[in-house]
Image (cartoon, rainbow, N blue to C red; front, side, top):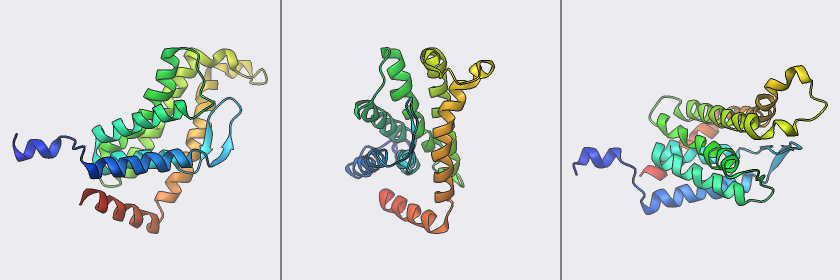
Length: 190
């Protein structure tokens, strides 16, 4: 294998696994810090999605997607998971949370974390909305206007995802936070 090939393939070194595990653990712990909890699932948490997006930003798409998938598995086992069918579980937990690893595709771009994070949460929201259309429409509150039923899964899922997303985007745009993330990234990649 040439030197060029090895630099483009993901490397699951001890350091990569350690930083990824730390990000997953922080994300999991922060998922318990709920700023607002929605009645039928979903919460605005204190930047838990950012911790998972950092894995991709540090190590690229393969490691990022794998780490985000592991986080989705943990979210399923966290407690309070909703199980309607195996496909629903795959879509709502394993596939939707894996979207947070899309940040890895932007790791070398200017403002890559910001762009990748926004794309990751938008894709996660879209996957949850698709799951909402397929599995959750029967659980729509009666108070929700019937004429707007078609947008209910979009409104519901993006309410908590964008709520946390806005808080996180503001936070990672602050110069001291940018500097701290840059330092941690340098340590992860050194």
